[in-house]
Length: 164
Image 1 (cartoon, helix red, strand yellow):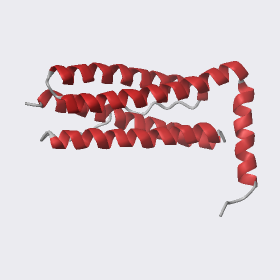
Image 2 (cartoon, one colour; image 1 turned 135 degrees about the vertical axis):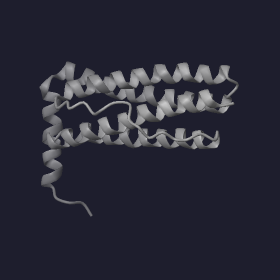
Image 3 (cartoon, one colour; image 1 turned 120 degrees about the vertical axis):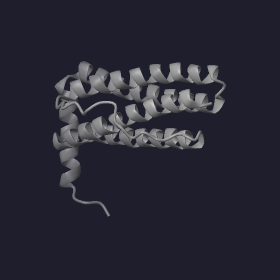
């Protein structure tokens, strides 16, 4: 009865797994380049995406399905911050579009609870898009100075020593 919902939720899990892997990769590389704020933004988003996986998996299990834990894509090896943000923005925009469509499909299949799951995901993905878009605008507006300030701030924090 709920095969289509289970299929869509597993697609979402697949996309979210890819996002977690990609954002963790970006987190590591931003941290390595001393871009502390962006590093923090990527790990925070990855953790939120993990929550999306859990939400979708719980719904799949409730519907009697099997949770498929296969990432949609391999991590893209990007080291340039502008390119990281560009990809992240696109990923979030694509997810919001998919989840909107899947919310409508769930509703058409008389599955209001799954529709609500997807609607909640749309809100989060649009917020993530906005965060990445704001960072991209800041880089375009202030250029490399914006990234340099992040690097300097990261150095200052490390120089002040561990906090207790």
